[in-house]
Length: 243
Image (cartoon, rainbow, N blue to C red):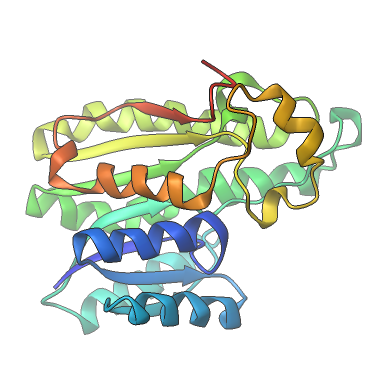
């Protein structure tokens, strides 16, 4: 059975991506979550309602030992199944102007996005290399390209994901493994629910926030055979705000 691991897929973008990849490509979805099991089960139900298959896989992406142990145990229990797609989606924000950013807030944001990407990719990449096939999709952000005031930690984290995407893609392209990043702008999720949407959408040429499903369609395409010759790319999806 071909499988796709989506980190942070209990809610928001991760949930939308998990549902779309299941629907479009027929992958068995590994729904990763850190703590919100209720929300993760909602994602599971949604996938099953669409005729797909999925299971929960709980771990904190920041914790390297836990990630390694949980994914290794899953592989041992599922020797016939391969994780062919990894979407590094887990991320958090701790926004503040730089003088007010605590070391803890800096570390938490960096470790969730960057260390999380490292931990999860390390846990699956050996099997991808042996299989000479795979898709790695890193969910970055407009912040990582443009830099956003009040988000020095988040911009640093997403910028690091983008640079890593470009480097890793060149290392493993010969093994038919693609590595791409998606850089969403303002998307309607829990992460943006407290923002002043009416004010911010004036900055967006499309004059609206994007939908999680719009990002999910892009992720699904990058996970498909149709995107086999696309690697090392950072694809913006932001309504023209950073054209």
